[in-house]
Length: 344
Ligand code: 2RA
Image (cartoon, rainbow, N blue to C red; front, side, top):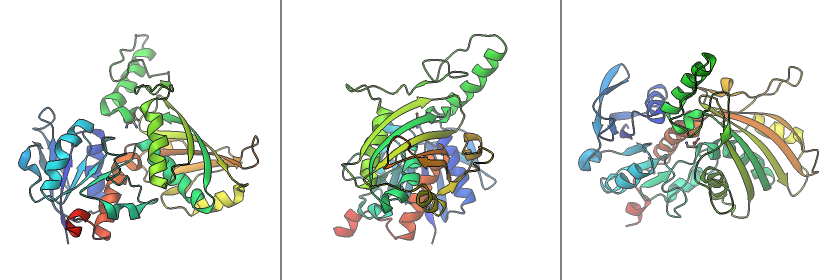
């Protein structure tokens, strides 16, 4: 069987990656529609050697569509979720608009595939930093529940879009040529610099990006009492996020056991060469499906603690690949029609 898919936000960094993944994963497509806002529509994008038109999204864009992969920002997802579902499609939304909505499953296929069964036409793709951390930590959590997570992130420019990636390059060139860099995608120069994630701050001094890691991880793990704190930093790296993770368990968790678990964990690649001091790096993670994990070690400050380091492609597993894997999951489990329809 094959399916009619629409990509909403086809011209963005994640949209481009969705196209590439649908092609290279040989997704069972009956038809592919490329949709964008009026500002981005009009040109064509190559798919399987064919130039497909990027159409302006409108009321009847979703007629006959089975799956909508949305990555055009929260306001666009909010505007088009209802029409898409009414047309009989399932929307897999990469924005943060619906992630904490109790009626919307928030899915990392390696972690909580079962939650997809409860969808009502809408499934949320978690934030990139959350996905990468969840893939690495859930296998450990399954063996012994994690009591507390302290996460520090080193986030690539790609999280702010293709324009931000270009800005790092041009700013670097400007600086090397002795010119003043002109920040546009970010409020400050990113080349040869780094700064706390510039999403809005709450009364506790945490930014939205940090609260996404706290709230989304609890929902995905089904562990509301999981204690999490995070510090999210933007760094001058193009498309792979890195995260330093400190874990506290109820009992000691041996490094050897953790290493053995992660060496077999779905979506994880263990990268550790202690003799060469070689561990995950963004340049190795970029373009890859796996989350690279390494430097697993006992926390010398806590008998029940572990430390680890990870790198993952923010555009791929952090967004587009996870969304395509959710679509593949829905097909595999015959979950394309909303549970609502099934119950009515
Ligand atoms: C960022 N995770 O990196 C956010 C949005 N993709 O800025």
